[in-house]
Amino acid sequence: MNRIVLPIALLILLPIFGLAVPFFMSGNSGGIEAVGTLNHLWTYVLSSYIASTLLLVLGVGIGIFILGVGNAWIIASYDFPGKRMFEWALILPLAVPTYVMAYLFVDLLQFSGPIQSALRTWLGMSTLWFFPDPRSLAGAIWSFSFCLFPYVYLLARTAFLERSSRLMEVSETLGYSTFESFLKLVLPMARPAIFAGMALALMEVLADFGAVSYFGVQTFTTGIFKAWLSFGDRLAAVQLALGLLGFVLLIFYIEQSNRSKLRYASSSQRKSSSKVLRGNRSFFALLFCGLTLLFGFLLPASALIQLLLKQGLSFDVRYLAWLSNSLFISSVTAVMAVLLALFFAYAVRLHSRLAWVNRLLGFGYALPGAVLAIGILSFLEWMQWAWWISASVAVLVYAYLVRFLSSSLQSVEEGLNRVTPAMDQSAALLGLSQWEILRRVHIPLIRRSLVTAGLFVFVDVMKELPATLLLRPFNFDTLAVATYQLAADERLSELGLPALTIVLAGLVPVLVLSKMISQKRSI
Image (cartoon, rainbow, N blue to C red; front, side, top):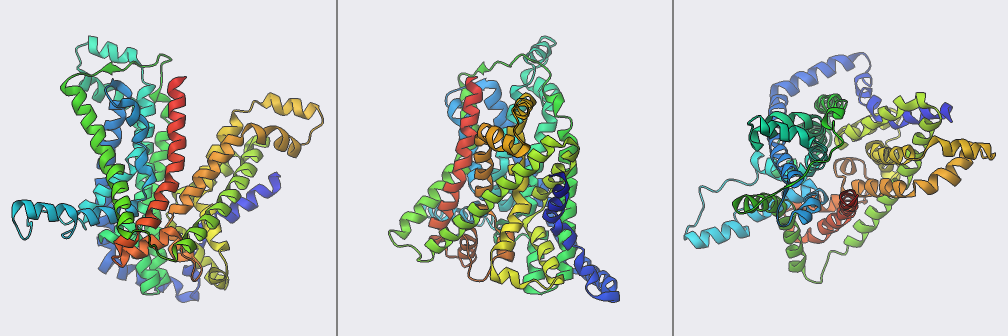
């Protein structure tokens, strides 16, 4: 087994090497052409891409920190009416793709939307000069923040629950207020977990195309699509992809370095107790959590249902094709991802020296869909296999596996780690081979982890947009692609059904997470 682990891993990481292919496709002039393209990009667009990307990352970082840490601290530290419901309901915004949130945000706040229309009628004004433009960088920051804050909420809440209540009590006896104890003690202890959640969310921001393009924000991802699809300049697309990859690597490095310090977030066996809030404090805690849930999930879900009701019983005849394509490609990818994850995780269990391979495969999740697609396209063009894209969905499945294998691999590894080595040794004494031990011992014991791994990959594929747009075969549209195209054509009334289908699919893993949280609370 150990002989084929490395070749398969290199095959999965092939798109990274594909990014270097265009620099060698033009012979000796490749380097000169590359420098000329880079100078042109820097002169006209690169500076604006860098500025917009930095401002977007900075704004979303502040937004998800406030929403994620604020809600996590309230839920972990206090008791108030509705806490049990908010504890799991604050995860629901993860079910709403960022591009769907963007379409609904603009639809609600644009000039002809219900909010501005109601305000104009109430104030008796023909225009609201003071009303901000929803299609702006600020609108993008708002939408991303309310979609992605659960990444920070989940990890920060766990860190806060594991904090030492004794240290809080000691700090209060020394004269610190609760807020001062939070700033000077609890927040520094939870810093690695908070940074890890923020890194995951910001990598999603950098990888997004549908939302930023709809808001008109010029980021590296929108530049990659323009360079490749509009101008046919593969060198420009590759160089922009490498620039985006640089941003992702920086965030990935920060996340990994902070994750190594996670042990400092939990240093006591004593579980912290929650304080009961009453009066105004209880009201403000309820208000903060309630508004977060309202803007993050309830309003988008209500808007989607309203669009669906507007459409009535009629629906686009292509919906069934979009649905079947999405279900097919998601199911195939999920099954293959679970099988590969099981293969790599079991290989590491048998040969611990191969653990670095699985860590390397985890880098695939950090690859934005646009970067991944450009790497695959460059490699296929170099090999003169570009016809594969129009002939089958194999390239698309391969891209999804590169992107989402790490999420299934983590789930399977956690399941295998819960199986004691003594079981392997007992089975070996009974004469079972390694594969028989896997089939008859491990798989039955980790069946729940395998299902969870496949479920998360399934939903990730359902929502994936950038890689699908670039790599899908002709006349093969998924629900994500259809939703994006309908929004781009300003046919928002028709995107209710496909967008709601994606949200309902995303609710499944969210409900699994909420069940896990309730189980941990009852232990």
